[in-house]
Image (cartoon, rainbow, N blue to C red; front, side):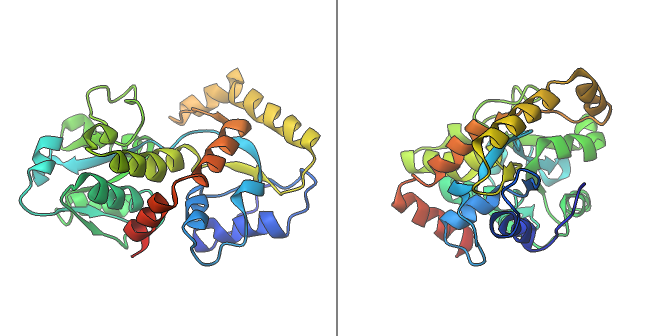
Length: 274
């Protein structure tokens, strides 16, 4: 039974799973993993400790890329870096993958960026780009591939940068953001603020205190589902890809976030929220 619990960018749902839901293995939470970074950065409204959730896994890693219209003139990283004026990117809200990665890119790589936030979603950002209101934007490749397919295939829209540790199979020649980092701090900002968060942005979790036996049962069932031939055939019909993380991998990544150097955490807070 799916119960949508909207509000505060899924924060209400996360707080509910942590504070209200019984730790009996019968309530599974699914919310935006970017909330874990918000906890680390001390944002208001967080009533959970991410280190105490029990993690089932994540079905896919977010694969954030930046795409621009050909008409904008930003058709390569060389042209973006060399732009004499800030390049306008559309965004939706702080904490989203349309807003936070561009802010980190601007600080870490010195890219000329003017983020125009407040669009209702990526569809509106794409339409704004096609009308010339903005040059483009940054969000998940799966979404861009599906909803901006016509522009990508015709060459009217171009992916110029990907924020992944390794190139996506669809984008072997598109450069990686981290390879443009000139300092260790810049590399750490991209790794901690983009790569790690993107990997755990779609977690499935259980309330703290759920028995280890129930956790292991659900972890196994989760992975078995994502390997099931019938399930994968259905997913393929919907153009959905899966690149799962185990519960243990999500747990290690979350734990690693809270071990980041305090100076780096302060820098991220300054970049994203000031």
